Length: 635
Ligand code: COA
Image (cartoon, rainbow, N blue to C red; front, side, top):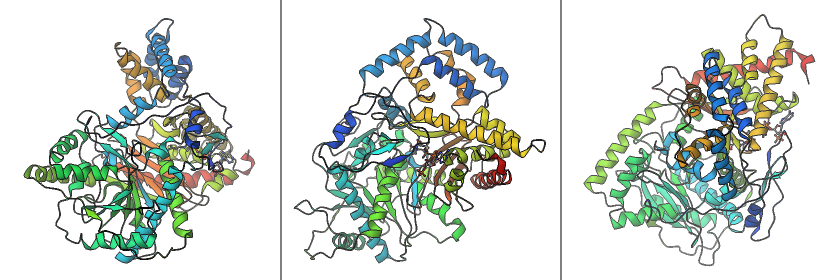
């Protein structure tokens, strides 16, 4: 067992580049039923390129312009020149990186997995794992809860069939097929804590697991979801099994063993070793890790007004509400945990290391379609064995670890400031009618909102998909640009004519869209700079000055960390800020409205999630007004 893990993470394969049409989107290509299609598809995906050094350095200086002072920029220009000069360290590192790209399937993916996730030591709760709020369901009691859970499980198993048969529709971005690897990593996976670095394991490489885990009142159960002939249990059968679990876990004074997974990763790694010293505990933990996914049947939480409902649910999905509520009703290392309340609330939380949000919400879209369309299959009531309760022997040491984990988690929960906003005034249809990219439109409005509060822009991160490339994950779209700053400063300037403001808005939106196209083609700057820095560490050369410079620190201190996670379902993803004085902003643009989540930390006096959400709403309305009132501005 290496780092406490049971198997190695598998890797895929790759090949040659293709071009991309601008204004593109993720859209499924017609499904195919050829077995082995996944492997064949993956083989022909292009490899992630290493951008030219000078191109990245020029773009880096340009990206610094709106966020550092002129003086700092001048200093950085000299450092960059030194770095880039003929025969200098920059060129040597670039050559090493290009060599790495020739030798590996993806020069970035292993590094990224380690740096962004497995070596990141803050708790996965809030700091890494996103939550998703799903539409409220029409049930209000335990029976409804279990019935919905049974349907949901059946829907996920239906999706799993496409993964198992390799018939999952291949997605495309602007006509270019995307890497589908993430879909093959999200079921039967789990993160495992390690003292310096965690690992993430997918258990489908050997004998495919056939059970899921159910947690209710902090007690875990193993539920086999396939019959002996390999067919999945019907909704009725699953329901009956869930009822059995519910009845045998009514005791509420159980130790919330799952709360241990909310700890700082070093702490949890220590606690994990203590926990699995006991054979029974080890076996129970292994059962959770190997399960296909987890269903959390949550205890009721206090009712709140309709206005507060979504923000409260986002908190439930993100962290479970604290040790008094449902935070112990989770195993936060599990890749996929679906959360179902007694009052119709539902959602999920997922451990981020194997995948980005889009595959997760695509799975949810499928499940919701399945739940809404599939007729209930009545099945003969063949008696099924009682699902196995997973036992834990709680020693005094483990009890002490649980108490500490509760205290720390409760502090984190109190520190979390969340505001969800359903922006009702318009959706992506409006930006499209203005011939503007909806995503760029939202990002520029966010720049305006931030500028109105703080009087200056900040380094802004938006995730861009690199899935056009084999094993691609993400790069960064830097939304604070020279053009966005020109627009936000002009917008509230009474001296500026509306026509000029519209021209500046159009330029800002176009610049954002152009950055997006560059990023999804693998030509953005963030991962390239990271690669050069990591290459310096690997080649044991002194860390070049460019990475020690104040401008670099400013550029990578993302006060705004943002992401679009679009879905067909009217849902909303949420995640925490990435810096103590920052915001996390996630949005799902629907045709006629936009769902937003905004998070911040209460411990930071300068941030306020509700305030940013309010300013964002106003900024979107004002930008629309500007366009509507200036009709000649239409492109
Ligand atoms: N005029 C009219 N329509 C336009 C337009 C224009 N100028 N530009 C774009 N559109 C349309 C698009 O065709 C698309 O249409 P659709 O609704 O029919 O699909 C729609 O507007 C959305 O396009 P846009 O807003 O530009 O965004 P996008 O779909 O290209 O997405 C990103 C942009 C950056 C979000 C996407 O490329 C990406 O990388 N997503 C991954 C995000 C991710 O991984 N997040 C991780 C979270 S954990």
